[in-house]
Amino acid sequence: MAGILYLCATPIGNLEDMTFRAVRVLGEVDFIAAEDTRHTRKLLTHFDLHTPLISYHEHNKFERGPELISMLLEGKNIAVVSDAGLPGIADPGSHLAQLAIEEGIIVMPLPGANAALSGLICSGLDTTSFLFVGFLPKTSRKRREVLESIVSSKATLLFYESPHRLKDTLKECITVLGERKAVACRELTKKFEEFVRGTLSSLQEHFQNNQPRGEFTLIIEGNTKDEEDFEQLTGEISLQDAVEQLIKQGVDKKTAMKEVAVKYKVSKRDVYQALLGK
Image 1 (cartoon, helix red, strand yellow):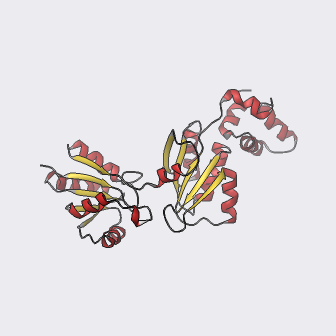
Image 2 (cartoon, one colour):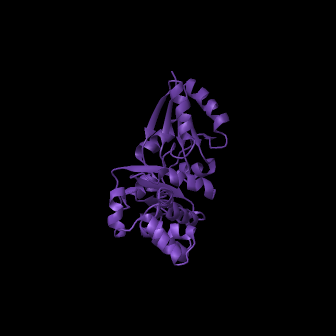
Image 3 (cartoon, helix red, strand yellow):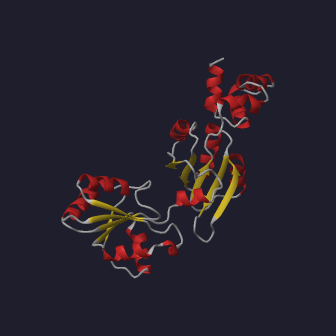
């Protein structure tokens, strides 16, 4: 009989978040497929586990994945772990799960810590509907394309971001999404855990004055504005008129569009389309 592929959650910071079940299974399986074997070895040492490790990550998944499937078909049990949290969320664990399912291999979850959901439930924002975006692309153009594709979503938006890109991401979000409530969750479950709550603009100001440190989960309010609400929000002034008023004051068109988008909490795309429709 084929073995079982376990997708095993590991702590996102605090080692006490490791479950009893996860510790037991990691000690019982034949192999552990790890994103970073050095990182996972430290985790295993902490729990006095000595299961053999196999390197499995984004850069070798197409080569190593079929090898792991062959081992499973031979009857070996394998657990997949990422560096932190649930494997298969923004990492190659999902690819291995797909390969296993195609071969009729049992895929079993070992639930546990997850940064996106941990940030969401402590954000104070709507939790009834949410959209996990993960890491945005590195280039400004591609980041904007992704943000423009979700600008109309009413679901709360969940992002992962590194400290050195956080300020650029906040700037891009303000430009494309408009002003919204937002929460930056820093170093979740770790010693310096912090929640910075406010709006995209207030977060941008905060991190201009406080250098971002640690890994971030960014939670942003979904699009809560209906088209019929706009006149009430703007005091009976249209988007076109708002832009033209700024232009008459000497502001260039591009800057005027941006300022109107931020002031009235709409996206620049909405402003642009309103101008085209005039």
